[in-house]
Length: 124
Image (cartoon, rainbow, N blue to C red; front, side):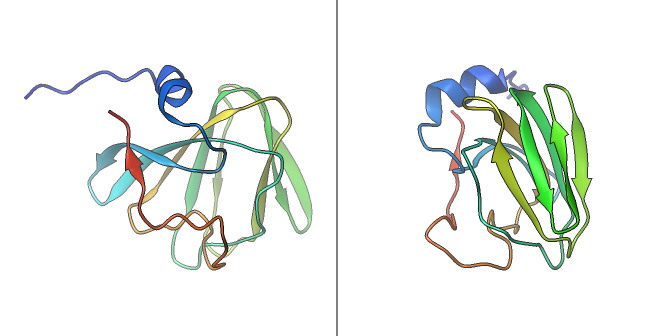
């Protein structure tokens, strides 16, 4: 079967109804490409063993760190190193964010909350 093309913004609009609910767009070796719509403010968390890459596909978000924050607009990219506590938050309505991380990475990292997603849906 040949690889298939996915427009991630269109897929997010069609298939993701809840903010901060990542979906799997594809697999790359032992890592996954995930997309999510960002909401007002997410939980503070860190990933003890995994780096996490963020690429904003639509809108604007901020990544807060305990010592400051960085704003990301469309096309902006940042890698959050493992063990760095962070908190994503929206700066525009329904931003769409791509995350690239090991498949084992939980969206809430080292924090178990009602926002923790243990079984991710796949984009169709």
